[in-house]
Image 1 (cartoon, rainbow, N blue to C red):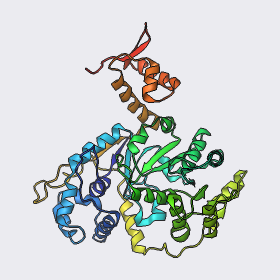
Image 2: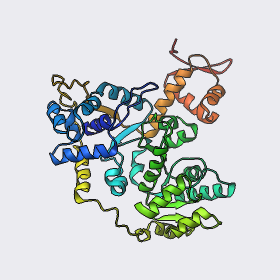
Image 3: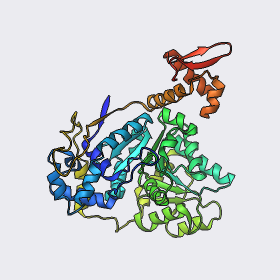
Image 4: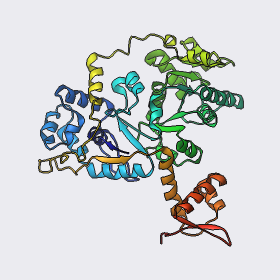
Length: 435
């Protein structure tokens, strides 16, 4: 089955995404979310959409939008078509997908909670169906003792047993304890990342869960983006916005990302009920309780667990109401044709002056099962290694994966005729090794 990156998504990528290929990639004056919203609103008012900036008469439309974003700035961003095609090919090779607010796959909870502050673009790897299933956000400090680790791990297991997805930031400490508790129990996890998505896709501890469809990685930031404190704080907001309820297991008082994210929910955003663990004395957790957080009820059966997600536990808020127009333009933006054309109609007219863009074709991506996507990536990595004979134990050590998993992959590659198994000594080598 083939899916396409829609013309709208292509346009949004060109306007807002850094499109990082590697070190030394050029920087551009990208539109911020606020600026993109202003442009999207203007396009909506004149009955246009982002993809119209990539059509044969785009020059006139760009001039019409110059009161919102300067003509030269729009031109510079929209002429990155060749770079876009290169970057998407690179993402595909790493099993990374990309969606925009214009796509049906974009999480409904993000639009509901963040409205026009929802990220224009999301990148990820894994089963897209997991994005729209809500779940329990488990949040807490990085530095924890063994008792808090075990508690968090058991929360993940509990969620898995009751069929509820865990939403996690993936950080060391509480996040990872809950995340792997759920995964080891056969449950589902959405890991919301602020950095290094591309590196995480190759991480041995995540690999088998991506292949099985139990884990999805998602980020609002370029797959090659490194650490940024602003991204980390915004990531906390996404974790809450993708969930139906949240549990803060451990928190410092008045400092750190856990405290900042939880107080923002309690004082301002109020997306979901915020629960806190109050079994042990903790100034941070007690202060969150004083701000309105709910004591975690330690549910032991499915009915009591489901009550955690009761919307009546959510404090009312009067500061989230946007105007009808603000909500409408997001809905309008998402009403994109389900079937993208085979080619974007000549993209931008290259004869138009001063705009001289690179052509952008509708880009087709083959949608496969996560296991198949990851095996394609594993195949490439192993074939690159096997320019010379290597033992299975050597491959296992290089890839930092179990010997049993290594043997399974090697056996499949032998069956598919991509590598050969030698004897005396036993070793593997690519059938057509690179010179």
